Amino acid sequence: DDDRDGDAPPTTRGPKTLRRLHLRRSVLSQSTGSSLVEWGHTKVLCSVRGPRPFHCSGLSHGGSGGGNGGKAALLCQVRYLSQIGLRPESLARRSFVGDASRAGAKLPKDVLSTSQDAAPHVSSSNSSVAAFPDETHLSRLLHDALSPAVMSDGPGGNRAVDVYVHVLQSDGGAFGAAVAAATLALADAGVGMRDLPCVGCAAVMSAGGNGREWVLADPNEDELLRAEGVVTVAMMPNWREVTAWDQCGRMSVEASREAMEVARDGCVTVAKFLRNCLLEGP
Image: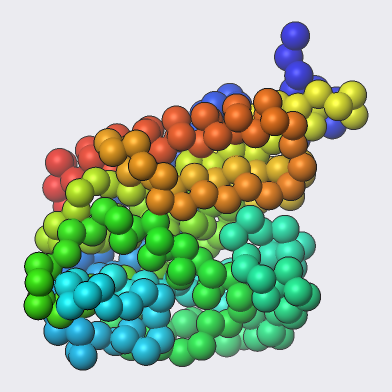
């Protein structure tokens, strides 16, 4: 029997099918490496600067990450454009939000405003304070997801790599798109990497009201809001190493296990797209 009936959210794709993924790299001429990722209706632009001396890093005091025993440091920053109009209910239920929003942090009025100029281009220092807690938390998570894969510069290197991510449009999966964009941009910049970190996400949906659950891969924003729970995994597929993991909401043990497997399968699929993009060239 198909559990996806009754109150199940409408979807035109199969429960294990990912949304459309479009990848481009070398899109910014003034960056060491850059990329543009379109994941469904979520669009993310990434710019990488470096490796360069740590004291020259634009994120030395404003980004996430830090020194690594005199070796290369990965410094990450995620910013949303003010025009994208994040829904308050989406921010409240977002999987990766951080303690500040769970404690009742309020969205600044200018975050949802459409009258302001766009956020500064990635070529600027971008060291301003995050507009809301999700940006700070996503910056930390991006660092955690990428740092195990980025090869150090050797003893005494004292080098820094700055990763700037701008979310141009958000429809769910901003973290996964940010990791994919950063991975491509780092490779485009010639930064040594042990693997291609990527993210998979799965939502546990309720079918009809009869208590039965089914798992949907790569949910969009509307599907996330209807989900009973969400599992998000960042990993290095070749090493089979999980670099970041999050689970929120209510779900059975069986549904949690299935969602984890679906998310891991999504990581493997995304890694193939990343590899193909790098092999095909800019």
